[in-house]
Amino acid sequence: MDLEFTEDENRFRNEVRTFLKQKLPSSISKKVRCGIELDREDYLRWGAILNARGWLATTWPKEYGGPGWTAVERHIFTEECAVNAAPRMPAFGLTMLGPTIIKFGSETQKQEILPRILDGTDWWCQGFSEPGAGSDLASLKTRAVRDGDHYVVNGQKTWTTLGQHANRIFCLVRTATEGKPQGGISFILVDLDTPGVDMRPIRLIDGSCEVNEVFFTDARVPAENLVGEENQGWSIAKYLLTHERTNIAGVGFSMLDLERYRNLAATTWRDGRRIADHPVFAARVAEIETDLEALRITNLRMLADARDGAATGVGSSLLKLKGTQVRQALQDLYRSALGPHAAPVADELSENELALPVEAARAAPVYFQHRKLSIFGGSNEIQRNIVAKELLWE
Picture (cartoon, rainbow, N blue to C red):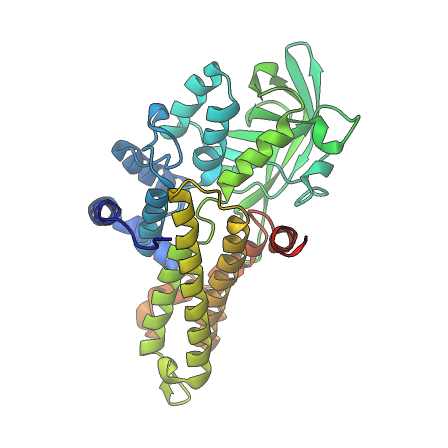
């Protein structure tokens, strides 16, 4: 197994680095480094820059406006974006719905939906989870009843990330109640301005309203918005979720977080010595560095398998599980190194006032934000079950 990048892949990495250096707006990268929430215009601005280069829809084939990259090239691009503090574009339209429409959508849906994702006309959000159906999606209760040329939708979705920016939502809905629960689910597209659709924000522990709940009350949705066949939604959702876990190890993000910690530890003092020389912190960072290197090598092994045409199997679950743990450990380490300075949730704190990096003012809310990593993309408990079933059970 060859874990080294080829000459062409290294050239591609240099091309990506040059592009980011020249085209990434400093105002956006500063927000990313400081853990400040990006607004809708930030995402649209960066998305337009990427789209002009043909690098926006990284998982799409060329015939639909994507770059047609290999798994290795996608990894390189994602890693370089992370270490250079480029924003991670919302996955809902680009990484999740787009490939799903390419696979299951009608020709009309492909022609209408895909270009509007690329040019930013449509911002999609995801309507899967419900108050009583999170990881167990088969228990969802939102109903869609056929009435002539429409479906009448009633129910509730929750944890709808960035729904406040969206104008459309793709949903799993129940269209049949007989038989196995998975067999009565359909995949449908809904305009958020449809009468009977109500989006309400949910305030999180860090003070932001990144997620929302969506209520459907007799919302009439055109039957042509059904993707695939009625009651085929479970199969479509499983396909979509494989794309949600693309690059989920987050190695590049962890590398950026580790660099941020090292810069802080080299200039911050505790008990009369630099944090970098403190034995407790030195032991913690050594453990995290070891885990991160093991994660990086495992990720390269998965990429080597993909390059050779082999299926990664349980690999994505392992990467998601360990990648989550490493990223959360780094945020906890950074917050601990700041000590009492990490307590305030105060954006107004400046570098001059604290003699600390400006991103230190966001250490607490960023730490709280990272608590969710062990839940989204399939909870870590479920990933452990998958690993146990695939690797430990006979």
